[in-house]
Length: 127
Image (cartoon, rainbow, N blue to C red; front, side):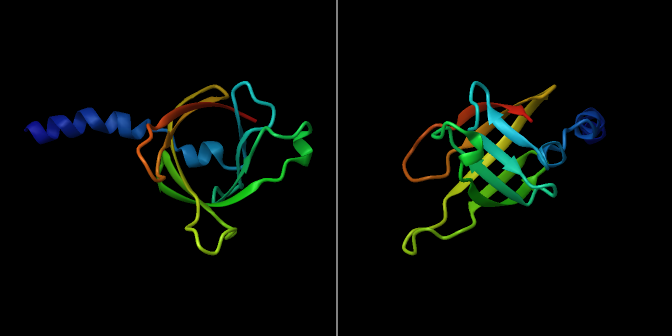
């Protein structure tokens, strides 16, 4: 009986879960307060480009190319697509999408590098 009650309580929240792959595919997420910096996703969500804020014209920004593996509907692992350094592993980023409010999205950047660093909460505008 307890299992049935637990399932009944969880089903509505699972049904209403946001499929963030669908939300961000074909879109650019720009850091709140930035002009260029952020990440864009291909239409099918399998490729991403990261952009920085170091140029005065966003059109001159050279993207950092990544392949995307969706671990579930709200977590994406982005892996460096072009090997820059033959003796180093690819750079990896884990984005855990937390909430969507209009064109604003909140993402937890999960630390996956060496050393102990806290995860960071980032806020983006969807364009």
